[in-house]
Amino acid sequence: MIFPVAFLACNDVHDLPPSNEQLLIETAAERENLSLFVQAIDHSGLRQALSDQGPFTIFVPNDEAFLEALQFLGASSIQSIPRENLAALLVYHVIPGRVLSSQIASGEVDTFLENAVLNISRTGGNIVLNDSIQVITSNIEARNGMIHEIDRVLFPPSNSILDVIENNGFTTMLNAVLTAEIDEELAIGGPFTFFVPTNAAFTRFLNDNDLTASEFSAFPNLEDLLKIHLLEGVLPASGIEAGAYLSASEEPIFISLAPNGAIWINGNTRVTSTNLNADNGIVHVIDYVISSPQQSLSELILEFATAESPQFTYLYAALEKSGLAASLNRGFEDNVTLFAPTDEAFEALFIDLRVTGIEEIPAETLERILQYHLSPQRLFSQDLREDATLPTTLSGQTLNVNLAQLNINESGLISDFLNIHGQNGVLHGIDQVLIPED
Image (cartoon, rainbow, N blue to C red; front, side, top):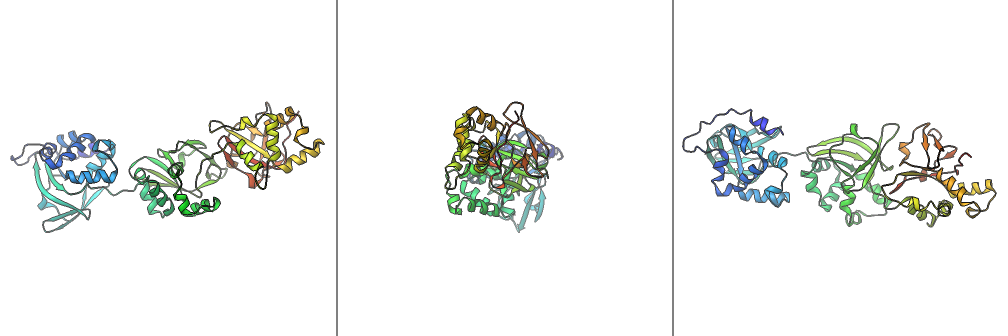
């Protein structure tokens, strides 16, 4: 932390009037209505720095001011505030030198919080800090400085993640954050990395899911939906790598780096702007709302197969007959990619094999074919690379990627069925059944 170093910049001058030989914190402790300030100094670890050095002038909030601040912060006590955050708040109340109230003039005054000033307005004997905070008792002398009692806690100008959201016009996310009551966490918690959808991204998400804004706000799991956009720690764009990241919702998100360098999340969300810096983290802007898959690949295929306009019906039947359906019914701990032949692709296979359906193909043959469609890694389309060779779950057999033709071997990837995300992996629709070598 910078604060002890900053205090060292003061001269060690203790030439105060002999009427008070006590130090600043001892002087404050003698006044009944400044007890919470003394608690805050002790909890933050600043007592020694404010005692060994000086002179300082401290604008000390009284107990009523601290109680109001605790309520505003949602903190149950001084001790519940992280020490580092509390220290930063307190040194914003400290300025260099022993400054009598008669010496205080209108204007900006540097504090011991780096790059943070107090704005002072003086009218006659009335002194106001930061437009609204009154000095109510002045010139409380101590051996190494001066105390002026104020009626509210001073909060330094902030550029929190919450401020970044508001100042950049992300009103839909701001309203959702307020509704979910995670605004305080984004204002004073962290450090975090927050992926923030634009207003247009929210509109697309609502339209795709036939939701109104009010229905979205009423989600019982709204907090979890928002927190899947939130990561612990600061992750600038230059530090983002492909892979899984655990979100604050305790569910993973999966980041891909496309061949052109674009950053994608869960295969359907692109990062459009990066590195909006905040005091407590960093914000990246995205073009869709991130959501966590709720079904396994096996469950997704069954849902497709039983839909009003069914697809992948033969694939599901083949998985069931071969005994592989259960292996695709897993959670986030598994990572597979399934290149999924459409019903039309299976019908073409039936013609080639001169059979009428799945039931005429031996289970062992189906298992071998399907294993050749599975790669033991979670690959979104953005993870694929030209001429890459992909391992499969069929021993000794690999697949070849042709991005120029959007092919896996000779089978074309189908754009309408790309990046279908399940808990245990990704499904990509293809227009031919892949046949392994003998």
